[in-house]
Structures are given as C-alpha cells and as structure tokens.
Image (cartoon, rainbow, N blue to C red; front, side, top):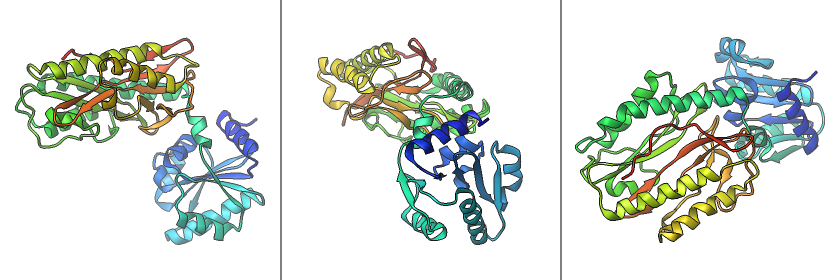
Length: 357
C-alpha cells in the first residue's frame, strides 16, 4: 500500500498525465523527503516511488534524515549530477516528466532536456496544492515556532524605549528566539520606528527610537524548518492624535478579519472586509499590500489573502491576518496575528498582547 504522501503525489501525477515529477523547490524537497539541506537536493516522484538525489557531502545526513529512498552521486559534483540524471531516467522511463516552472532555471531546464531526451512539461502549483492544509505534525511545529516568538517578544518588549537603536532591538529578539530553540529568525526582523514605520518592509536600521514614535515589530521563528509570523505596533511615549487614529483603525480591521475566519470563506472577501473598514476612516488608500498569506515551510506560501485571490479557506490552513496603513513622512501601523483554520472557525496561535497606542 502506498504511503499517504506518496499516494497524494501519485494522484497529482495521474491528474496531470505525467510519468514523473522532478521536484527542485527546496520547501517541496524537504516536505516530501524530510531532508534538511534541500537546497542541495532534488526529488523524483513517480506513481509508485519517490527518490531523493544529492551528493556525497550529504551521505550521513541523508542516511539519518530521509524518509524516502535516496541516491548519492559520487564526487566530483559534475559526475554526481550525471549519475543522478541517469539513475532517475531509468526509474521514469518514457513519457512526459513535470518540472517546477517557478523554480527551475532555463539553464537547468536545458541541461535536463539534454540529459534525459524526455518530454519536459512545465508545471505550476502541484506540490503547493498539497502544502495548503497542514498535517498535525506541521501544525505542532508552527505552534512551537510561534510560542518561541511570543516568549522572545515578551522578554524584549520592556526594553523597547526611547534611546535604543532599532538594530539592537532586532538583535535582542533574535537572540531571545535562539535561546528558546529557534534555528533562527523566520526572516529579517523588522523594527521600524517613527517615519520609518511607513515602510512595510523596514528592516531594522541604526535609527534611534524616539519619544512619540510608533514602532512596528515584525518577527517570527523557525523551528524544525517551519516558520511563524507576527507583527505588533507599539507606542513609545505619547504619540500624535493622527498616529493613534491610524492605530485604532488598523486594530479594528484586524480584529474584524480575524473574527470572520472560517472554512469556506473566500480569501478575497476577507481582504475586502479590511479595506471596507479602513475606508470608513479614510485610510483605505494607505493599505498598500494584501491582507495576509499562508505560512509553513516558507514564510510566504498559499493561500493568498489578496483582493485577486481565488483561494478559499479550509481546515488545516495556517494564515496571517495583517492589515496595515502607511503614511509617508508620518508613520505606519501593522498588526498581524497567525491563525490556524479549524473545522468550525479559527485558533489564534500568536498570543502576544496588542497594546493600544
């Protein structure tokens, strides 16, 4: 009997009329194989079996980690690649072979085409569809990653005061997460204060936090390869009436969208809830990004919570809800929670308190 993951992959191949699928996206390689150095590996999926391919640097690691059979190409690496291609070609025989168009370079595509003399078919969204809803094991890893981030934030929050550099706050947050078992931050930690908080991706700089600033903290941890994601905006000292108005509007939109999360709701409709509420405060034009995204082995994955999304929420999905408004020269606000979509609603995984400005 085929294992559950192998069966799902076999079903994908059958649906697409493929003899095999050559998997190169690192997150997909890790999901299928369990191998923790997926940037240096590939996976071949056929209807009946799955193989991981890597080189001799990873012999011991592949033996220890892989939950699928693996093939180790001998050094030098040029010979290893040739051996991998030859071994894979024997396993899929004749017929169309899918490749991941979003990840494979033109050079790699041409190399495969020459090595295999096969009908290579560009595919999109195949493994992504398998990743949308998480297994219990994946959910637990993401819960743990968020717990680490929450605890780190609680430790560092009292130190976010006037006179500190943004970069020093970010470093403290990273160290606090690593002390609690994180492999590292989920992305470059954002600490953006004052006028810099109007930059949605304002990673920490040498700017000194000042009294009257709003400070946006966007952070997450990686645990067992899985990510967490959370944003809090906090006031240092007394902020202006305009900044407080922006904060209250974003908080209202965020809480309304969280409350609306349930299986069956269109992601585009959730995005619209936020925009409609911000429009009541004349702030909708300052909402410069989508409402959120899925989180898992990648920090940004499906589903997409944008106005153009065709995705529909289903149990097991883990998503962010993160409306924001950004007024250049003045400042910005973003508030983000990490949610698990459950059978009858949602579970908020991010526990850090949201402070009123």
